[in-house]
Image (tube, rainbow, N blue to C red; front, side, top):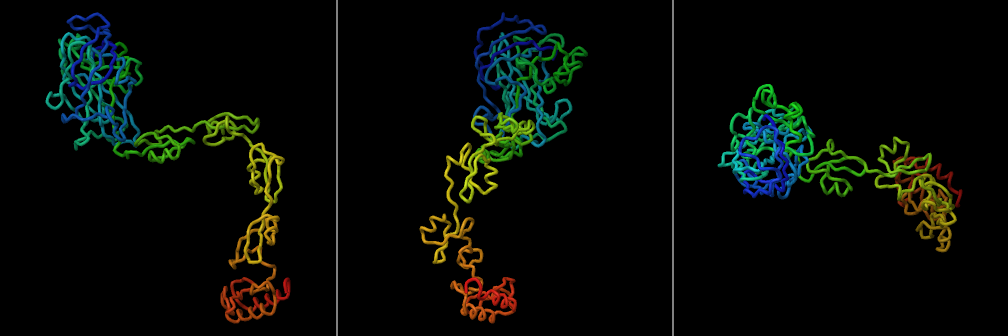
Amino acid sequence: MKSHCAMAIGLLAGALACATPTTALAQLAPTPSAEPARRLVPLPIHAPKVTFTPMSGTGVEIEAPGSGTPRDCAVVASHTDANFGGGSFIVQAGFAETEIAAAEYVLAAGQFPIRIDLCEFIIAQSNTIVSTTTKWSVLVWEGPPSTGSLIASYSSDDIILPHLRMSQGTQATNVQFLIDPGDPEQIIINDNPSHSFTIGFRIDDHNNQTGSACITAPPSNQNAFPTTDVSGLSQPTRNWLFGVNCGPIGCPANGGWARFSALASFCRPTGDWVMRATWTSLSCTPGVGACCLPDGSCIIATTTDCTNANGTFKGDGTTCDTAGCTAAPQACCFPSTGGCLNLSPADCTLAGGVPGGVGTTCATYTCFPKGACCLPDGSCIDNISPTNCASLSGTYKGNNTTCGTVTCPPPTGACCFSTGFCLALSETDCSNAGGSWGGIGTDCADGNGNGTADDCEADCPSDVNGDGESDVLDFLDFLDAFGTCENMPAPCNGSTGVNADFNLDDFVDVLDFLDFLDAFGTGCE
């Protein structure tokens, strides 16, 4: 490729090489002559809407990713910002036969191996005075094209793959090359030292090359050429050109492969190649990928689980290494001033602030709240934080509340009824119900499992038969139980159901008898 005649075009749609010709619009520049164009002669043109027919390597017409429902896990790799459905482009009219336009794409190592699903190339012609036929090839490398492995090459033969035919006038074609998903022979790219793959488009035969490409550019009004975008060269080291050998002043010098960054300025394209590849990681599970949570963390989740966690799903097969999750700003409170700013948690902490939490904003969040706190004994404390209120086992009544505006409930305690039943009630309610109130802090827990709340049991340790009195019946019941299980591990109940392990040392012996005698006659005899 000696030079690249810059020709801006507006593309309204895409087409395969076998697309139906369309009618040229009115030209925006003088009609070129039929003589071969000299180098570096810009020919601005405008292209009308074109159609496309995606074809597979076996000649079977199938639906391309992007033209219908996207395939699960499919990812599009492209350096150009050009819109493949329409826009402006630059036709590289110095492109000669056997030259290759190629783009290299670098992926995360964990995404390999991948399958190439679709390769797309925008090819155009400028106000041609004849209908053109171009023979072409698609090539795929594992790694960069200069040192990588060529793993796939498909050439048009007009039997399986059609030649690129375009009618007289101004035309633009989207050459779409696919591998049938049902074909057992897929294009698989494995990981390599560069973690990359490359796709390329080669002109095998122009419609009319005429003469030496090193001396004269292929006639721009009789041939079709690859295109670059109009927004500037963003990836000079990832766009490649394979040029014919035109000696030391060729593009590139002495031919062969060169990155755009290595080309001389007078022959370096000013934009990125208008081409892209759709690929799928073989490790991708449809519906599973990276999920960015509101706090900036990342998890691998299904789309449903990600939505339920209020996260943002980054796509099928994506990983947290490449998801780029960031925490949303939240309220950041500054203790020294009491002020608030909406900042990321990391920036808030570094600035000496206190993050308000996920979903908070200064407009609705109260920094350092204080209010009234009702204590368990029914009293109230003003101007206390929710944290300090909780540490006192109190109930926080809300921000900016005061004891004068809130009602603290009276304290509750165990209300013991003569039936052995217990309820947690206030002292007034217990009295109204005819119960006996155990006091603040008492409850109806039955720790010993005897069916009576511990705080409702009388302080009468020698009442072993539970009749509320300590008398000779308790003495006889204890002796009966003791005699039944003396020197045996507790619990050991006699015929009366009395536990003989009086001192609760987990064994029944003479010490229990002595402890019972010591307690007998005291407290409730």
